[in-house]
Amino acid sequence: MKALITGSDGQLGTALQAVAPTGIAIVARDRATLDLTDAAAVRDLIASERPDVILNAAAWTAVDRAEAEEAAAHAINADAVGILAAAARDVGAKLVHVSTDFVFDGNGGIPYCPDAPAAPVSAYGRTKLAGEIAAGGDALIVRTAWVYAPTGGNFVRTMLRLMNERDSVGVVADQVGTPTYAPDLARALWALWQAEATGMLHYTDAGVASWYDFAVAIQEESVALGLLAKAVPVIPITTAQFPTPARRPFYSVLDKTRTWNILEKPAPHWRVNLRTMLKEIAAHG
Image 1: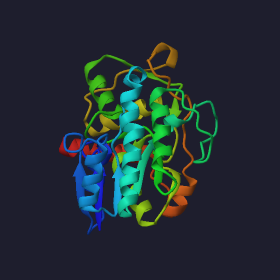
Image 2: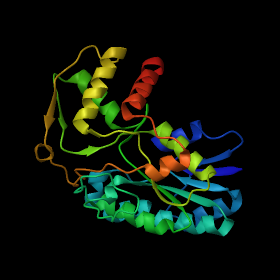
Image 3: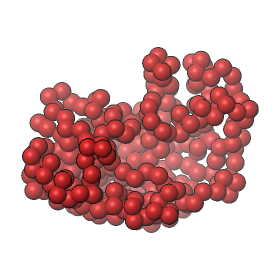
């Protein structure tokens, strides 16, 4: 069996390679080795390699920049997905595409089911929704949120740096969702493909948190592990106090019931996975 992983140098792409099932030959491509907007290059690669599955971990994730550069974000988050989907069909490969909680407006108060109406409030969300459509009905699409890993740019690593540098840290407390540990998400994507899942599914860690809750937990766990020398005040602030070019959903908890039924188990709670990641950083840097 052979798998093509796009976005192979990102948090999820790296994790997908690290936890790949035994016996899977991996073809890894990042931005430097494959331009996903080049239809001919994508088609030629897939026709040559003939993968059984394509795991699309590539994405434009600069949420605020997308407000000013929506066309560029759309090229990666939507047009490229359509190119991959067409090339996958040509060789009979399964496309596994990763999407986001940003396709929802965040005005709800209960977890969003996979078939809940999408209503993105940002350019990034619009481009990701367009990507879901471009993937087609024969693809497996998995929405996730708040992804973090021991390497790369993410909220956990940013908090560790700020808490080490500053006397206090202000963190938004009125946006609620669920963190997602990239290696666990990667394991779930492999398992869902092996289970021949199709259509729209959701996957994050278990539990619910605000960014403020997440930050407090990061500090508590990091102090206990010696990653931070001391605790600093973590101050809850509102979205209005921390304006950004792109609107964020206030509530973007995803309902994972269908996914957990397929996998026959729930995901670990986000605090358990956070502790796992921080222990890895403490052990390996």
